[in-house]
Image (cartoon, rainbow, N blue to C red; front, side, top):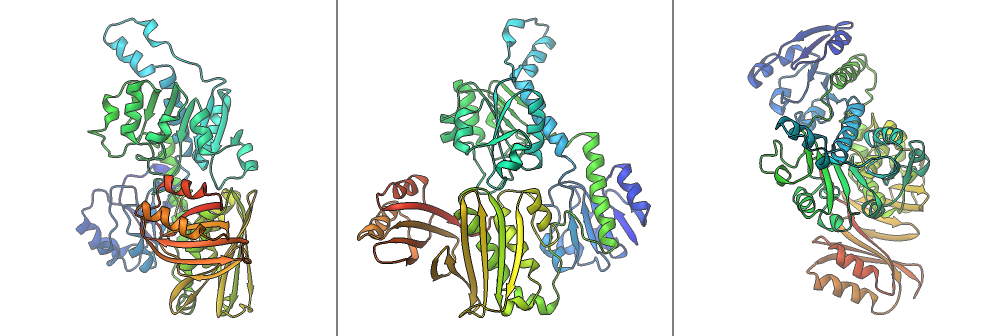
Length: 527
């Protein structure tokens, strides 16, 4: 087969390709030039500069796979690739060590004031007393996000004899302990850690995860490090904290806007700033090239790719049957991830009724996608869902039965872990997803992008008081459903709302004497 390499790749990656197929290196092609020749090739390798658009894919009559030598795939039109039957693979693990080492390097540079001391020396100064640093040994490192990079940082911090605490809703205590990490909540990290580093994807839930409110509660003298994504730290708030002396120092490798020409961090004191160098090592470039090229070879040979980022096309018959249930199941997973308290250890997907006659693996992948989407920057699909679940310590099982009770088809997710068990079920009626069950409460409501869920005692006036608190906050209720076990017993109330529920309002509802628990559910994807 013929492979086109459109950007510079490490020699080791090219050797993998050439051992199996014919390879053409054509660098610096314009979009028009790429579109003109792409129809001759079975595979395409790119990095981050070449844009693989729908227009280019329209000419790719032979293309089977696109390999991206790196993590992000923003330069590939995934929807167009999927429609064209083209598998897209990336290399999400190749830069793990480099990013972890950059995190440790920046942490040490801030602690020992290395950059400022170097600048002073180059000015001809010798001011030893001005650059007294601190030791990291014995200090507490807080890691928010315990994926591959977060775990690698912990492994290296153990060598520095640091105490390590971490937060990740999808990592079990046993898995964290293997890396010397004690699982705690984010508030504990904010209030107790001497050094905080964040390793999460950027999305609605994680944007500004360290903002003004969190900085106000930081331990005095804390060091902040960001080698993850620009935007997870509120740069203005961090700059203000540095100026006020609340934060001892900060090291940033990524920024909200790159290059960060107007970032307040540029003029903030006690900072070490680097131009997105987390993956910029010779070794990482070799690894991402090898990882991407090996997967391209696998796909061309008809094997599954380990890090496919788009789902393969379904047979027409299966596609027609399960297509309406894919968004439903993903939504159930997304709701379940927010409803369940604690780390999910096991996921059981029950498929009942007519739907049980078809391959349900994509439904399981859709459930995992909803559960994991805010915990990983990798897209979850049929090819990589099982691997990602295993990597997160998630045991997944799938069951089928022809008996769906009064429903034609029913999908039920059971999430279990240290937080207990949560059950969510749904169906599709008249082409519309319906939420049918939460735990032992049966209901019938269309999931909406924003929902407020309360578990409360069924006492007169409780529902009215909750509605009044939302009304006073200008939060509009568009639909509501109440489920209860018996009169004046525990009740579950779901409210579809048109507006975000402020944290203060949710907390006020939680503090109502009849309210047992509150969830603000975002059931719509950020993608």
